[in-house]
Image 1 (cartoon, one colour):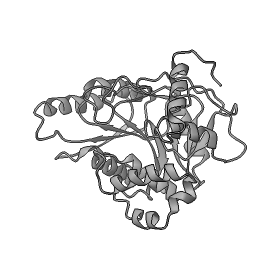
Image 2 (cartoon, rainbow, N blue to C red):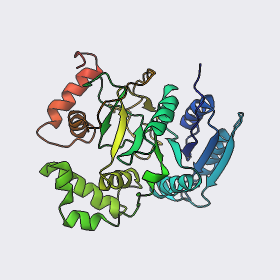
Image 3 (cartoon, rainbow, N blue to C red):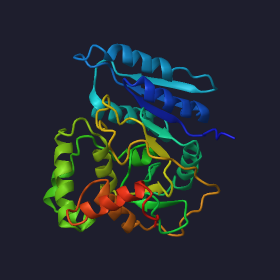
Image 4 (cartoon, rainbow, N blue to C red):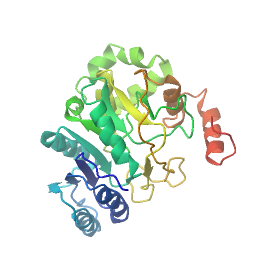
Length: 313
């Protein structure tokens, strides 16, 4: 039986009808009580955008269940940084908590129940900033718990609360003070990681990352000492690694259309809230391509795992 979510859902869309149609079908099956539609306007220098954007909006407006629909359609193109950021601001002005899906993040049906239960379970715990659907451990896990805690707040299908999003600042006004004070070393405890993230945050604060907003969200969570909840099975498949994507152009990518698994219920909750440092190190050295001492070795092992040549740990 398909789970009917109790949580409002926000969809961030633009000009990709094919991926939008698949994600909207997953949302339609979950029948959220409220649907927030965040759409950017066509780019003035791309004449084909107008028809594509109109087609996308027609898809997400096909609501045939009992649902309140709210629309936030930009009149001019804001870009893939400002448009999601201002759209999510708008969502949390209306509701206390929400599930956020971009037009290329296809969730497993059990993702919605997982978000419902996690949002309720950690609603009043300020240590938890976000609930994420992505798992990129490729079978690695330390416990039989349903999820673990991480410093990385992956945004390919996630949920959060107004109480957490209130700390988001697109312009990262506190970054100069954090950088000058050397606070990243206190958090990351590794010279090379500090160097990499300093460069990322420098560019994000200067809006030089081709319209990203998710690094600003990471920065906001880190400033609060916040943790993300990550599932021990992958619940999100990114289906947007195509030429029409902005940040996901290549299909020769370890994270393109990853397999998803069903989350089992009842959930098994960890008995303590401790960040899984080993999982984060794996993510840091593969997904973010960080430490030169580990990257080549770990990515080779990752590809062998993907080919089924190694027994999953």
